[in-house]
Amino acid sequence: MEKISTHQFMTLGSAVLMGITFLPIASNVTRASGRDGWMTILPGFAMGIPYGLMLLSLLAQYPHKNLLQISETLFGKWTGKIIGSIYFLISGYFGGLLLAQLGHVFHQSIMPLVPLWVFYLCGLLLVFCVVSSGIEVYARFSELIFPIIVIALLLNVVFSIPRIEQGELLPILSEGLTPLFFGALKVMPFSMSYIFVLSGILAFLPTGKQELAQLKTGVWRAVFLVGLLDTMVALIQILVFGPTETTRLVYGLLELGKMVDISRTVSGIESLFMGVWLGSWIIKISAFFFAATWGLETVLKLKGVKGNLLVAALFWGITFGFKRGPSLIMEIGLVEAYVILPFTSVWIVTLWGVSQWKGRRERVLKTN
Image (cartoon, rainbow, N blue to C red; front, side, top):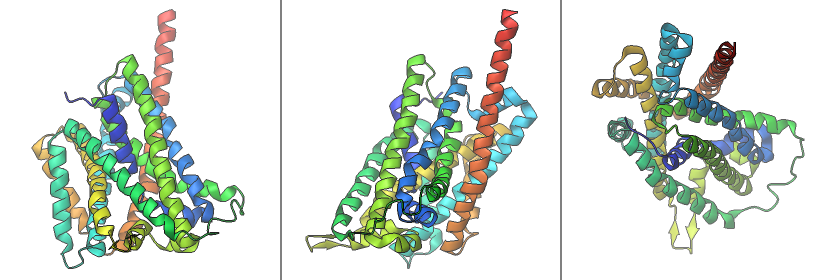
């Protein structure tokens, strides 16, 4: 069985958690919390830490099993299949939405004359190649791509510093702490998407005592690394555009790329950044492709090439359901906030609670 090292787990987790959150996050938190929205990003991501630790606790009790298999063990076969069906439907639908988003962003930003279906097909082929290579290759791919993504983000932030408008960030906390709560709620769905995928990756993680301690550290590091990076991205947009314009610009980071001017010789390098960020989409879409195959295996015992082809067909079909970018963006936000967030949070808390209750019951019976 394929395995992921503890270092690969941290890098892969960071890449999945990051995804393409750096594109819409500034607009989301600024709309909810105003100019103080950047303060809500790290707390919002930190909400995922308890859920990550609960997953690792379940891994220690049920080694080499993912959460779908653990659900069958604790809840019974048919309840487990119902959960697996929901998991498959969510993964397939959301993965298709992300693939459609990739096509729309590249079509509108750098290649408007290329038909949308070409971007869908190319993106799907890349994802299919990554998934067909297995989880180990996927983890190594993330190890290679994630540092490049981080460097591209940092360069975008650094090159935008000369365009900062003084005073855009002031006054701080002028509306109190209450708006920060609503901003954190806008960020929580991103962390729950990470936990949603992590529930399937459990089966590929080491289960030794030392490794489990390193995995717990990996969850903390992934959350704080991605939280700090997204905080910088949101902060620089507010400083450059101001809160009103940041709210209006759904993909403000692309606008920053267009404004980059290096020594009056190099400008408008958003296409280069887009090339790097393509890796973010591939990692995120591949994560939900894997999740859909795990759900399919749980429900129909279908895996391998046949399962991958079925999931690819599902992704392909969903991409053509959205002709307009704004409706697609709205749909992605709704699925994350009102489907993935409640399903994942309730599922994991319930499963962890039942496992703890059964564990205590077994210990009591042994002592008696």
